[in-house]
Image (tube, rainbow, N blue to C red; front, side):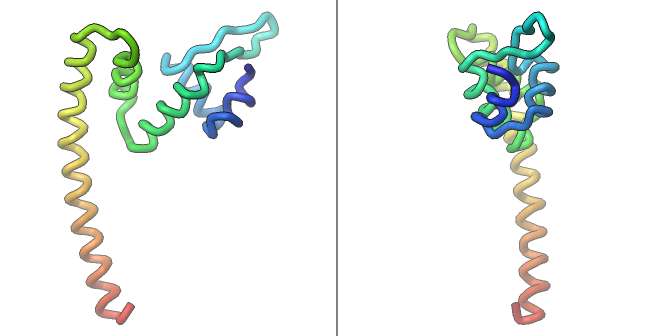
Length: 114
C-alpha cells in the first residue's frame, strides 16, 4: 500500500511516516516510479512508533522497543531495560515538575474563586 493509505489507516501523517522510514523505524520498498510501497504490518508498527514518540520516548528507545518485538536476543532486552531505567528517572522528574506546576495553577485559581 502507498504512504497515503498507511497514513489514513494508522492516523500517522505522511511526513511522520517518512521520518520513521528515514530513521529505520519502518521500512518500505520502492517501486520503479520511486513511490514507497508498504506492507500491512507497517500500519501497526507505525501506530506503535507514533504512540511511543507521543509519550516523548527518545528515538533510540523506540528503536530498542521495536528490536525487542519477536525473537530478539536477551542482550537486546537487557539494553532496553537499561534505557528504560533512564526513561523512568526522567519521567519521575517530569511528574514532579508537573505536580508542582499543577499546584501553583490551582493556588492561583483558588485565589480568584475559580
